[in-house]
Length: 517
Image 1 (cartoon, rainbow, N blue to C red):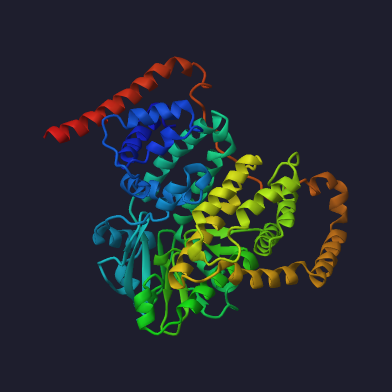
Image 2 (tube, rainbow, N blue to C red):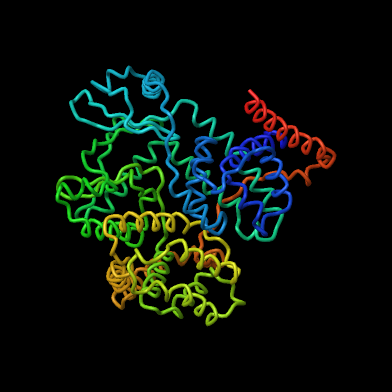
């Protein structure tokens, strides 16, 4: 087990990178930040020159792969990091200098236990993409097919494991301080981040996600997923169909090719809604680098390491919430929050409906170009604080993806109205899923299944009907010994504080020597 002093030294080192980019200023100024965290931040920034405008994305980029992934995760949490940081973190580019091709070639051969030449006739040694976890190359198979080959960076699993252990340790201590830190549930945030990262580290899971999404989107015209080459895919290598197309962010190239940009924007929004609401399984990394447009206008998605999933009940609530916001039925939106147990029952439904109206009314009937997504989210998260709503981690990826899709749609068509595009789709889905025919069909199916389970229900009736809200059961969190709870550990506090001070002074000395030299 990693010693607390090691965790503190790592945090101080990372803190200095954050300080150099001005990213600690907000933490120190926030009245909700626990006093020990403020003190640690002050030690970390000792002797640094902080820029006037914080650059959170650059700071996370400097810290390394795990921080890049964490930064992308925190971009979903304006309640935790603030609106300014959220907007900045959405610009975080998951890219690092590539490792030499020789190391990548050796990794391919080692993972397949076979020479690379038996799999690929040719691989371009210059990567087309170099992210924090893997690098992507254009290649030709021995059968002559052009493919994209994604290969994990050597040693990345061990490095991520070390850093995530410190994130877990820090989150456990932060949450134990109570107050706003406990309500925001940082431990659960890190647990979700760890789960997402672990999934990304198994490229077979990414291949399976691509295959599952392709099946779910078969009936949606103009949106497709590259096919997977399963014979050349394992836990560390993923091989998929090569895509020739224009990046969806290259507006000038799309116009020059004769594409209908407003139609592309609408199709992108509807594709996302189809995934999230109809299928309950959506591409959660729909940034501009992961979407291409083919010559025939088809939108092609790549990179399926981060996927979101929402169960049917949560999708019904989500659809009703979206529809209620688009039609101004704030009372129904408020009722759903209470039905889903997102809001504690001791609050007033009517007061919550009025609070939602204050956020929703300024948005209705306006194009996206006249709206601030940041202001909207800030208003919504202010409501969560006022009404004691615990963070719902299962909706965080959805929120982040909605912001991404909205930004891309606006770049294609600045006059697009997201509500007008969404409302017909959501209305039709609600009619199909919650209308009389659907209710009768669901009731028949449920009753038949219940009859077949009568023996089991008699034996386990109480366990068969647990009281659940709209949020899924949180995953089990690892036990993290707190420094002040460890037996005999109280006597080691001076050592940890000394380590923190020494770390801060050492970092300050290195800066100073660099300036003098």
